Amino acid sequence: MNRQFEGSYLGDGSRLLDEAVLECKICWYQYDPAKGDEVWQIAPGTPFSRLPEHWCCPRCDGAREQFMVVSA
Image (cartoon, rainbow, N blue to C red; front, side):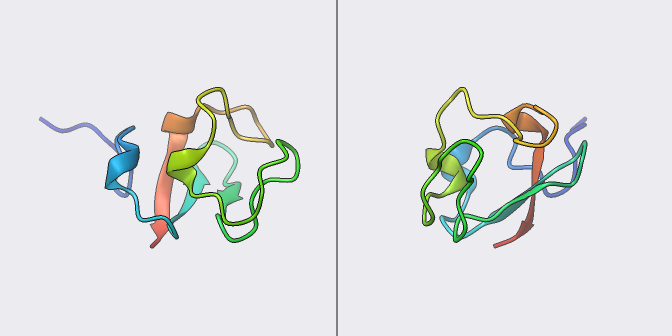
């Protein structure tokens, strides 16, 4: 039985489109690759799949696996 959240990328970055916007399921922060992430100094144009392994939600410190796809 699959117990993953709907819209989750299941931790597999190869399943994500480069332009996919993902949302933290804990605090609803959205990572938009077009904007990047000022807190972590991630340049605009950086896809979610290319974020550093140690990256986490800049608002609540939620793990990458806590993010779900909201648009692609």
